[in-house]
Image 1: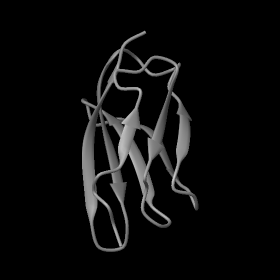
Image 2 (image 1 turned 180 degrees about the vertical axis):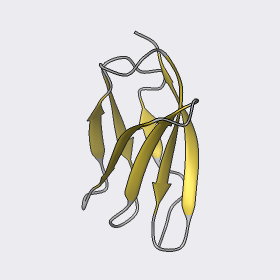
Image 3 (image 1 turned 90 degrees about the horizontal axis):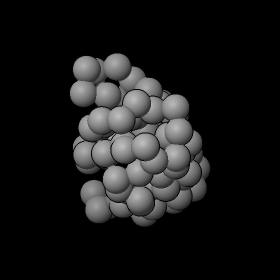
Length: 79
């Protein structure tokens, strides 16, 4: 089951984000507005913390996908 209501906190963020309420074994990808991938990974938990201190200020897309579905959410980084 995929819950498209995963949460990104804090948002806007500076040094880290936490993704909550993730589906089972999701693929997670964060891309900058230019299309450059700045994070790609998976997790076997429903929560994941990601260090964003090296991300440039701007707007990113967080894509969480499971077997049948993917959901994109906007992330703002502001140091």
